[in-house]
Length: 555
Image 1: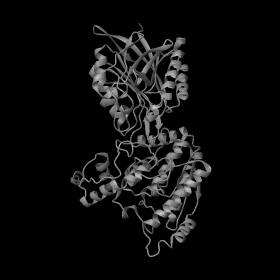
Image 2: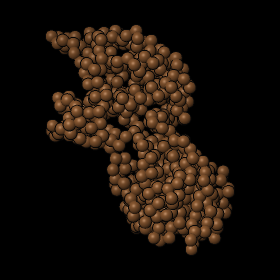
Image 3: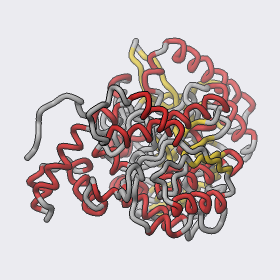
Image 4: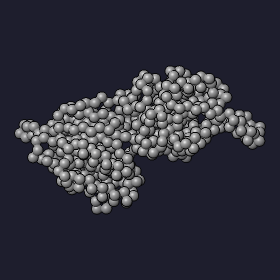
């Protein structure tokens, strides 16, 4: 029976379905941790998380079982044991579980009991819950192994405590949401530790996976609620924690030596880091050489260019200014200034020849009709086609730059400025765009590759937003001021409030009714929008799934 255990917490990235790369990463950690007794990896580290319908491929299940056996065989050398998350088949049912690999074999397996089935998660679509788990004996210590959602409800930890668990080790695939790190630690983990009197080690993955991003921020809390270890957010990290068996009353208990407590990114740096890491992993894991985007001189494209540079480096970001006869000299200067501050390539391709060609081509069909939104949208679509042509010809992925405020009410052109492979701002309201732009002009993210100083001319942040598709156009001509619009959208989208409830908060009824109408009308556009990183609890697509065709209104 050991009185001291070295438990290594490995906060790693994953690539869904790339079992070989995930195995290689785990073995690399093991090779660098010969002093460890046990290495703990995040939830489903072997196959990646969330696997979605890929998990329904029998070949993936079979390969995961083979690779897990190979990993187990590696522990025959007497080195560190490993706690590895994967998928398991028992009695014909599929389970999300974790395996203790020790002594050359799979020494124990425990299944997830609480299966999340909301927002990002569809686990009941794929898995059956396991039974309430029993502790696992490891070198004289009784380990309770709740998996992610298992600690968000009290039953699993209470059950494990009643059966003699002495240390909780919780493996996680917990995606980032605003303020979620505080909720994990104070609202969940500390409660379980205090309620049961058992310390808890929480190991989370880090990295982007399509529309979700994982922030890491793994930690260890004691039975009194003290934070013993805090690992960094937004980057891979491996930390060796030392646990000692100490006398306590008539028996003993395990305590973890106090370790480093990293500072986590504060708001709005956390949002910005989420955008940077999500874009970085999306581009790199899908093997794009870089990205390109239209740089208009406005705030949305400017902050997207900054995010791209912080994610990939300036040498992998290509910006294009596409002026029309409505583009102001101010916008030309601001786009050039932004590109210069970021150090990116900037090309200028005027769209006037294409606009004139379309006007001539459509003139017979448009006879007797006054210019309207159609001509404005044509400019946007010409720009979208131009960018896609460059993307097709040279290979960089096109980043689209529309924010959540615009996408909520349809203030975007389908097949125009909505063109692209990924949108960092998809879940960011316009007021959030202003906040992160102001922040980035005065600070640099901890994971950023871009410049230390400002990334855009201050005028981009302070000037009134405009699409510049007609003379003297301003966004406020078509929409309520963004602070008003975003407050209404927060009520209607994030909190699912009725028109009456939002009006009761002090908003004009006609404005709220109009915003609700636009919100529902734009659903068909959002279905065709590119993916983008999830920031809040109600992003479009994964969380908020409305029918395109329906007649319900809350007014």
